[in-house]
Image 1 (cartoon, rainbow over the protein chains, first blue to last red):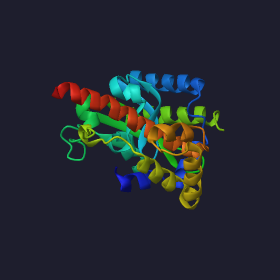
Image 2: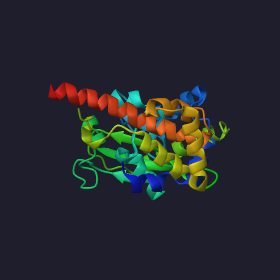
Image 3: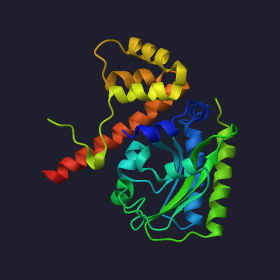
Image 4: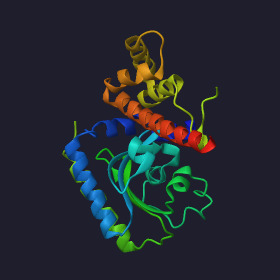
Length: 168
Length: 86
């Protein structure tokens, strides 16, 4: 396994902040699915995710357009997750065409799903930790606009507002 | 028979679980791990350990969720890999 990456993601402070939410609550899931659906619709993207990035995996806590093994697992290995890059950057992260981008061309997640472009914004907890990301992923090469980013940022604010109601 | 590693993804092991617990608990990790092992009992396997981790403290629970995602991903992809190769 990718120890260096997992050590960066799995710091005790960050994991504690994620653990402060009732992530498996079905009502929270329903609400976050709605946020993802809204972002996908507004940005005309086939896939949108709300996810927390744990130490070794991305865990989907709300989604739209998710299918296949990713749907079955409700996540992906952290080293394949585009949202891992958003979390580590701590700021919006964009990929115009993963198939042509040397950093992502070999990513099994993109290769298997046929997805190519990505825009994600970080989800930041009250303790200041970047706990996850809200994103859209498209199957075509795509240059995202400032308006796209604003829509997604608004979605991320809605996500954090919802999550704050599910603290444990 | 060698366990398949589709796309380089290996099936998580007990050692991976131990590394995760030590990582996320910092200095308290060895104590938490010892407690998990004691609860899971002898003949320690990931299948025995994951349910114990799932009802442990909230941070350990997250490790279990993360490992379960890797396990499910591996199971599905290994099955597809085997189908394609046969």
